[in-house]
Length: 115
Length: 248
Image (cartoon, rainbow over all chains, first blue to last red; front, side, top):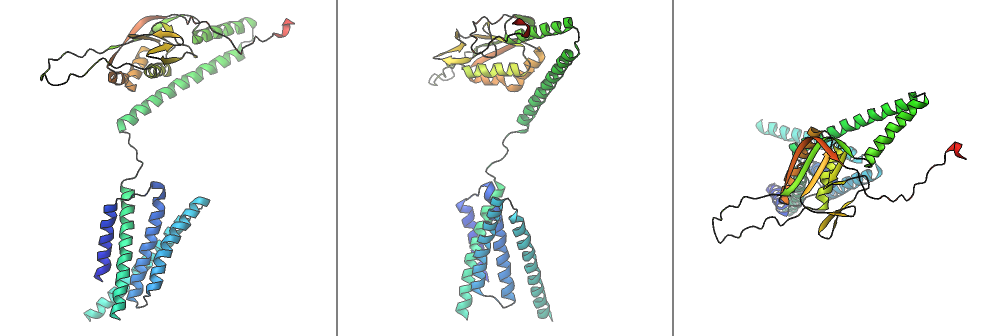
């Protein structure tokens, strides 16, 4: 369980060192992609706790969700439809759902251990 | 089984690294946006004040023209309409710079700034060359535009009355107004509300701007100022007299 945390820290450090900056008009696409990525991560943790984790599903979910979220938001902006709002709502709801499930699983495990 | 879980953690590590990079990029983009409002409050305030002043002037113009329109509409008798037209003609001639004008206004002198000769502390220090900069046509145009924008009725530079078609431009090393060469020191006369004009000059930072060219701007108000007519010969190109109806 340590390695993902180290990976996150390495990613943060690399991001700070690279000093990339996204222009303001593309910032919303990156935020959508980030939200999709976070959603997939929490989905992965949930499925790991539920013992239904599948690497291929997780990997494909991560890349496809981020790319499709950003791409759809871009196309929406192109057509004048605020698709990025839909993406934010959908991913946000899923994110909170996943978090709630994770919390329940962790709590029940903890209670079981206590007993 | 162990190998598989290790592989999974590696993949998770890579993906969380990607997430980390995305997070920092997003953070940096939103913390330091590329375009931001760089003007200070003071600058914005002066801009606002300027616009308010302009707004007031425009409102005054509107009421003036409304009044004129009303006068035209209501002047039933022939005599009255002729007098109104004469008044308007005189006003137009004044605006076109065909007659001399008199009234209160300000005089602006642009002279070389005399920097006090300080004794050099260190003889080896190079003395900066002063008085080597000149002002451009652009500076004069800017100054004149400020005056006109703040309600100056008539403006002249070194005795040359400016009209709507007057050009101020650099020709070689000298500044020409229309086709007449003017040389420093420049004296600019403007008819109008002295207080408004002086405060406009302060507001726009005229003094600071000319200081960069090592020039000093001396503005003072005069109760009585005379600006002569524009005496350029005018070539009328596209205008034709309209034939009156009863003429033929």
